[in-house]
Image (cartoon, rainbow, N blue to C red; front, side, top):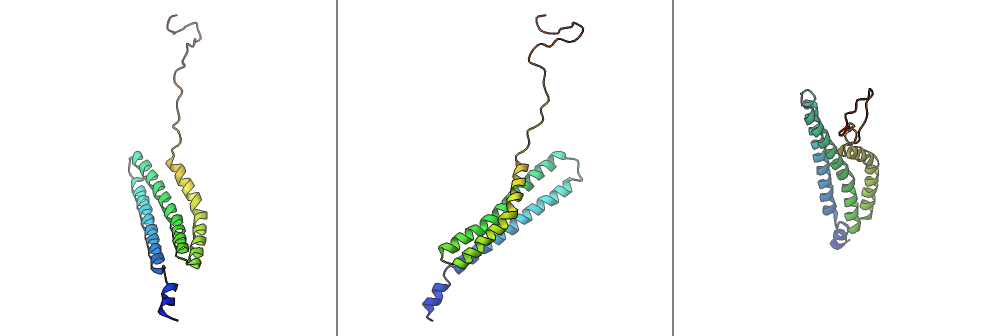
Length: 144
């Protein structure tokens, strides 16, 4: 076996390894961000500012969406790069990992997306747009 054969077999290994490292660091950063927001929510729950709690809830939803995106997109990108570098087994492993991670991540992302899209505010009915007569013959309509 010559050194050319060994070099051709290891082509792309450092690139895939670097991408895995970046993916794991992204997952750790998203998890730390999400836990930090959770600790802030815990702290605010003992306070008396309800508006701040809603803001933290929205930020937690964004952090959860980012974590779900990083968790599923990372292995998909690694699989694509590994396939382009002709590392078929590595590509298959990361493709399977993408599917395994996406199955639980998609429902979490959907729930977090619902929290970002607030429900329409309840509207109170206003005064009628036309003249309404009250009992007793008293009409308070303009013009009689």
